[in-house]
Length: 197
Image 1 (cartoon, rainbow, N blue to C red):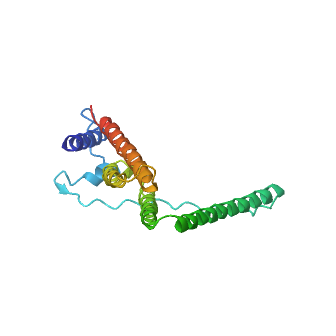
Image 2 (image 1 turned 90 degrees about the vertical axis):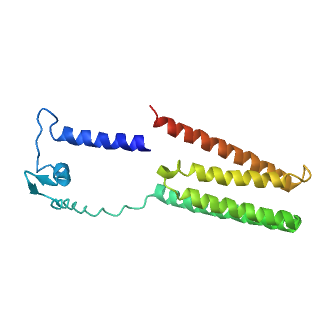
Image 3 (image 1 turned 180 degrees about the vertical axis):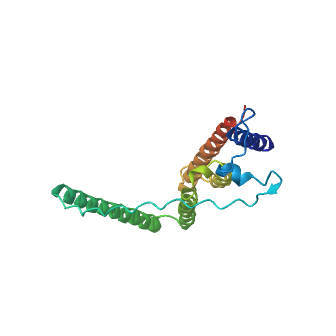
């Protein structure tokens, strides 16, 4: 990072000197907010700290909008939203019934693995979903490490019979974890190439 930080710092200084007129028309403009903020001594006088910048004017308050009247098309759109809400509840009920069916018919070892799998999916989704997009690339190393752990766990699970649910889920975990690790490395290499000459 030393090379990039030196380049960024040098670019900032170059732009500051260009803003001050460059070699042809160099001047110290005390009215320029950037120059005045960086100025410490001018003609033997200490000018630090700079005066506080003036506060931006407050924007005028917008006039209140009149309340829209409800048209038949708007009423139909509201009704369709309510029907979509019912569809969302229907899916949740169906998933709940499927989970109850699995709980009744599946062996206890499968249920413990399914519980850990569902919790891992939920927690992982919550952790990654709340990250700002600018931080996704630095998180690639963390997700690669987590995917590596998932691959090892999947390898431990595929030692049973090939048709058991645990073996199938272990194989799926290995596949998805490998895809995630490979994609993480590809994205990281792309990002690093952007900063190379």
